[in-house]
Image (cartoon, rainbow, N blue to C red; front, side, top):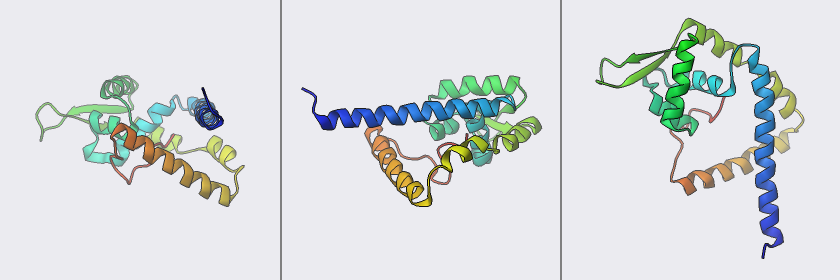
Length: 160
Protein backbone atom coordinates (compact mmCIF):
# COMPACT_ATOMS: atom_id res chain seq x y z
CA UNK A 1 0.00 0.00 0.00
CA UNK A 2 1.29 3.47 -0.89
CA UNK A 3 1.61 5.91 1.98
CA UNK A 4 1.35 9.71 1.85
CA UNK A 5 5.13 10.16 1.93
CA UNK A 6 5.49 7.96 -1.17
CA UNK A 7 2.85 10.03 -2.95
CA UNK A 8 4.58 13.25 -1.94
CA UNK A 9 7.94 11.99 -3.23
CA UNK A 10 6.34 10.96 -6.50
CA UNK A 11 4.60 14.33 -6.82
CA UNK A 12 7.89 16.19 -6.25
CA UNK A 13 9.71 13.96 -8.75
CA UNK A 14 6.95 14.57 -11.31
CA UNK A 15 7.08 18.33 -10.64
CA UNK A 16 10.86 18.44 -11.12
CA UNK A 17 10.58 16.50 -14.40
CA UNK A 18 7.72 18.69 -15.65
CA UNK A 19 9.53 21.92 -14.84
CA UNK A 20 12.72 20.68 -16.48
CA UNK A 21 10.80 19.68 -19.59
CA UNK A 22 8.85 22.94 -19.79
CA UNK A 23 11.85 25.19 -19.25
CA UNK A 24 13.82 23.06 -21.72
CA UNK A 25 11.13 23.62 -24.35
CA UNK A 26 11.17 27.37 -23.69
CA UNK A 27 14.96 27.40 -23.93
CA UNK A 28 14.89 25.34 -27.14
CA UNK A 29 12.46 27.88 -28.61
CA UNK A 30 14.81 30.71 -27.62
CA UNK A 31 17.88 28.94 -29.05
CA UNK A 32 16.08 28.09 -32.29
CA UNK A 33 16.60 31.68 -33.46
CA UNK A 34 20.30 30.80 -33.62
CA UNK A 35 19.68 27.39 -35.18
CA UNK A 36 20.63 25.61 -31.95
CA UNK A 37 19.10 23.18 -29.47
CA UNK A 38 19.67 22.93 -25.73
CA UNK A 39 21.95 19.90 -26.24
CA UNK A 40 23.97 21.67 -28.93
CA UNK A 41 24.37 24.67 -26.66
CA UNK A 42 25.52 22.41 -23.82
CA UNK A 43 27.99 20.67 -26.13
CA UNK A 44 29.41 24.00 -27.37
CA UNK A 45 29.83 25.21 -23.80
CA UNK A 46 31.50 21.96 -22.75
CA UNK A 47 33.87 21.88 -25.74
CA UNK A 48 34.88 25.44 -24.95
CA UNK A 49 35.32 24.75 -21.23
CA UNK A 50 37.38 21.59 -21.76
CA UNK A 51 39.59 23.14 -24.42
CA UNK A 52 42.36 20.72 -25.43
CA UNK A 53 40.72 17.97 -23.35
CA UNK A 54 37.41 18.11 -25.27
CA UNK A 55 36.79 14.55 -26.41
CA UNK A 56 33.44 12.86 -27.06
CA UNK A 57 33.95 10.79 -23.89
CA UNK A 58 34.70 13.84 -21.70
CA UNK A 59 31.76 15.74 -23.17
CA UNK A 60 29.47 12.75 -22.55
CA UNK A 61 30.61 12.46 -18.92
CA UNK A 62 30.17 16.19 -18.31
CA UNK A 63 26.64 16.13 -19.74
CA UNK A 64 25.69 12.76 -18.19
CA UNK A 65 24.93 11.26 -21.60
CA UNK A 66 26.05 8.13 -23.43
CA UNK A 67 29.18 8.51 -25.57
CA UNK A 68 27.33 7.29 -28.68
CA UNK A 69 24.63 9.93 -28.14
CA UNK A 70 27.27 12.67 -27.94
CA UNK A 71 29.23 11.26 -30.88
CA UNK A 72 26.09 11.40 -33.03
CA UNK A 73 25.37 14.93 -31.83
CA UNK A 74 28.93 15.99 -32.68
CA UNK A 75 28.67 14.47 -36.16
CA UNK A 76 25.54 16.56 -36.82
CA UNK A 77 27.20 19.65 -35.34
CA UNK A 78 30.24 19.10 -37.57
CA UNK A 79 27.93 18.89 -40.59
CA UNK A 80 26.46 22.24 -39.49
CA UNK A 81 29.97 23.69 -39.29
CA UNK A 82 29.88 24.27 -35.52
CA UNK A 83 32.68 21.92 -34.46
CA UNK A 84 35.54 19.97 -35.98
CA UNK A 85 36.44 16.47 -34.87
CA UNK A 86 40.19 15.98 -35.18
CA UNK A 87 42.41 13.01 -34.59
CA UNK A 88 44.56 13.81 -31.58
CA UNK A 89 48.20 13.70 -32.71
CA UNK A 90 49.32 12.89 -29.17
CA UNK A 91 46.95 9.93 -28.70
CA UNK A 92 46.50 7.54 -31.59
CA UNK A 93 42.82 6.93 -32.35
CA UNK A 94 41.65 9.59 -29.89
CA UNK A 95 39.25 12.21 -31.25
CA UNK A 96 39.50 15.79 -30.05
CA UNK A 97 36.69 18.30 -30.60
CA UNK A 98 37.26 21.98 -31.33
CA UNK A 99 34.93 24.87 -32.01
CA UNK A 100 34.92 26.43 -35.46
CA UNK A 101 34.42 30.17 -35.97
CA UNK A 102 30.72 29.46 -36.52
CA UNK A 103 30.72 27.40 -33.30
CA UNK A 104 32.31 30.28 -31.38
CA UNK A 105 29.59 32.63 -32.70
CA UNK A 106 26.89 30.11 -31.80
CA UNK A 107 28.35 29.76 -28.29
CA UNK A 108 28.28 33.53 -27.90
CA UNK A 109 24.67 33.65 -29.11
CA UNK A 110 23.66 30.81 -26.79
CA UNK A 111 24.93 32.76 -23.79
CA UNK A 112 21.95 35.07 -24.21
CA UNK A 113 19.60 33.53 -21.69
CA UNK A 114 16.61 35.85 -21.54
CA UNK A 115 14.11 33.02 -21.07
CA UNK A 116 16.03 31.67 -18.09
CA UNK A 117 16.28 35.16 -16.58
CA UNK A 118 12.52 35.73 -17.02
CA UNK A 119 11.65 32.47 -15.30
CA UNK A 120 14.24 32.47 -12.52
CA UNK A 121 13.68 36.14 -11.67
CA UNK A 122 10.33 35.12 -10.19
CA UNK A 123 12.25 33.83 -7.17
CA UNK A 124 13.73 36.11 -4.53
CA UNK A 125 17.33 35.74 -3.32
CA UNK A 126 16.36 33.57 -0.35
CA UNK A 127 14.27 31.25 -2.50
CA UNK A 128 17.10 30.93 -5.01
CA UNK A 129 19.60 30.10 -2.28
CA UNK A 130 17.31 27.44 -0.74
CA UNK A 131 16.35 25.92 -4.07
CA UNK A 132 19.98 25.75 -5.17
CA UNK A 133 20.94 23.98 -1.93
CA UNK A 134 17.99 21.58 -2.07
CA UNK A 135 18.48 20.68 -5.73
CA UNK A 136 22.23 20.34 -5.16
CA UNK A 137 21.53 17.84 -2.39
CA UNK A 138 19.17 15.83 -4.61
CA UNK A 139 21.76 15.89 -7.40
CA UNK A 140 24.46 14.65 -5.02
CA UNK A 141 22.30 11.71 -3.89
CA UNK A 142 21.35 10.86 -7.49
CA UNK A 143 25.03 10.84 -8.51
CA UNK A 144 25.84 8.58 -5.57
CA UNK A 145 22.98 6.22 -6.53
CA UNK A 146 24.50 5.93 -10.00
CA UNK A 147 28.05 5.63 -8.70
CA UNK A 148 29.01 8.87 -10.46
CA UNK A 149 30.82 12.00 -9.44
CA UNK A 150 31.06 15.34 -11.21
CA UNK A 151 33.67 15.10 -13.97
CA UNK A 152 34.86 18.65 -13.53
CA UNK A 153 33.60 20.67 -10.57
CA UNK A 154 34.46 23.84 -12.51
CA UNK A 155 31.90 23.02 -15.19
CA UNK A 156 28.26 23.70 -14.44
CA UNK A 157 26.07 20.77 -15.43
CA UNK A 158 24.32 22.77 -18.06
CA UNK A 159 24.71 26.04 -19.83
CA UNK A 160 21.65 25.94 -22.05
